[in-house]
Image 1 (cartoon, rainbow, N blue to C red):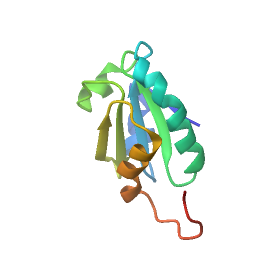
Image 2: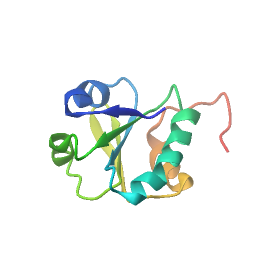
Image 3: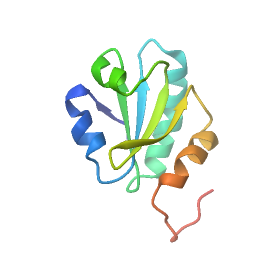
Image 4: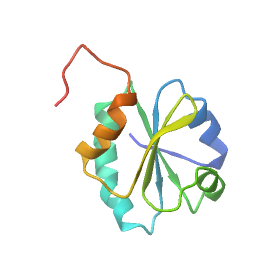
Length: 114
């Protein structure tokens, strides 16, 4: 599940999170943002327990988007221990998103991933 966050919740849900958080900086008027939503929903379901996926509407929460330096949508930023470790700008296929974030996720040796 992709949880929506706002300026008011960003520090608590993202910067102080105990595990990695993938933030989808998005906008309702952005077609590529809608295209990547199903990809992010799949990643959220498959990686539940090791990664949180949240979305932040840049029109609703412009303070956080500006502070994060977001200039284009969608922007995906992976936060680990309160800081951005990787960023993707633009819609990408699932494999490309996973390749960008997997090096920063906890290692799960109990099962192999497709």
